[in-house]
Length: 110
Length: 113
Image 1 (cartoon, rainbow over the protein chains, first blue to last red):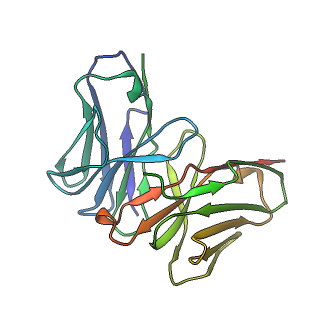
Image 2 (image 1 turned 180 degrees about the horizontal axis):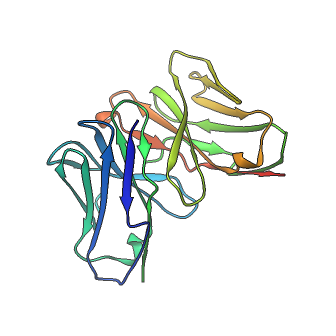
């Protein structure tokens, strides 16, 4: 079965600082990978998805970027964080339907 | 963009009662899935129902799908305190980019012991 590792679990960063969140996947090869953001009390917003190494699609324009340097590694980055980047970030993988999620990173931008 | 909309937004029941949550969506779908999220954790897949299915069971879960009304319901029977969580429906659309799942805003279920 698939296991999704996300770290860190919580992060507090000042406005204007850079960001790097990492997600790694075990138990499947060549998965589709996703980054979602969840605002407090809200549903999930798809930010990025990737169908293979180096292939990134962005669903919404934003201050964030994503990269997939290895088959089972997905990184979410920002050069300069904004207050509005605060939220709960979830990485997900799909080898076969359904999606498997990591436990998320709670990002607070102060 | 949001596709599914769960109803109600919040639901509070006593242990042993049944909990029913509804989901409405807007466009034609390939399948509809329900996920559960414990507070501060990732989502866990519960059940998937395909567009040509009308009802599906898994343990204490029962899902129905009415494609003519573009709606689905999730029934949890004989609820337990451990069922306390947020429940999300998600749809996979025909022709959607890479078949990405679109999630609703969720129903927050509280089961009191």
